[in-house]
Image (cartoon, helix red, strand yellow):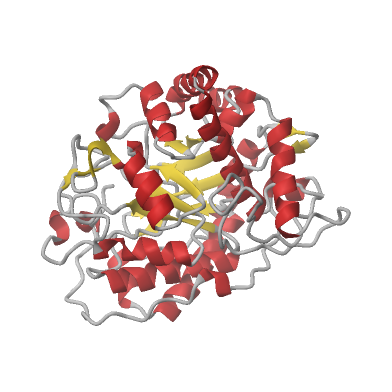
Length: 432
């Protein structure tokens, strides 16, 4: 990040109204990517609440449904149909393919490295993240994305569609630029707009990503940075990534951002749970980052709580340690943070994705194998690594632990079901 934006003036302190819940939206998103390439229609998809229970594999809570039309024969519809579709893919997969679904590997947004692509393909990696900084525009990005998608695994004669993600927050955190992409302002600027304006513009930004083949944004930032900390907050405030300095403003605007993206059929990710607003160090560049303020009842959790109630499909776990919640583990490796706080207390039923476990200084004291196993053991689902070269060690460690530990194997199976359910909702599985 080489460009620093100028800090905004003092903003209104009154809380803006909370954005309309995502679940109120009626989406009409066209199936793209692999499913469309096979002429499949995802049908009218609803949240996959299954007989396993609300927090079971395949359950996705109140995620928005996607209605699509296509040339295939009648697609499955309704909860039981979604479960059947997910189970069919899961059952047809090899163990290595299931493990590959747990990993999101980084690829350059500007050019494809054939060695990296071969590593991802050989390990059946099911999702990618576009990294770096590109000025190539939507058309060139779509060409690159389609090339990667073409190597996705096939199960039962159909490709398992890939999540293609990137960081497209705005300000200094905008990976994709150039013709077809807007220049998105930073979070503080977005937070000064009305929620209606933000929702409308977010829909435009989402449509631009969709045109480029991206179906998952690793945004919005749901972290609340106190005004008293401001730019001394290394990961968020320093780059003006926060929507505001109060839980109400961050809640209303992160919801508006997500609502706009949902309207365009692009999924979003609340980050960085349980919040990076109270820290000084940046976990990307600093080890042993600690938050000694946040508790399981802190008001700063409000944006995550409201976002989850609105149907957030992904939540990203941070790499900081929260001493008043679990002083022994970073959040991404903490059963207390993920299993108790996020799953049980806040009721999140979607996909828990890690912050970067490939290059972040916060995890360098752990081997890649330990990072992968620790995250899944804690209850996480999708491992994000911007470095494809660590994927083989991660995948092998997961396979080995699955053979040794039935409880761990059950966690892996649960994670694969959650990820496939999210892909089902995104129109990435052919379920006819």
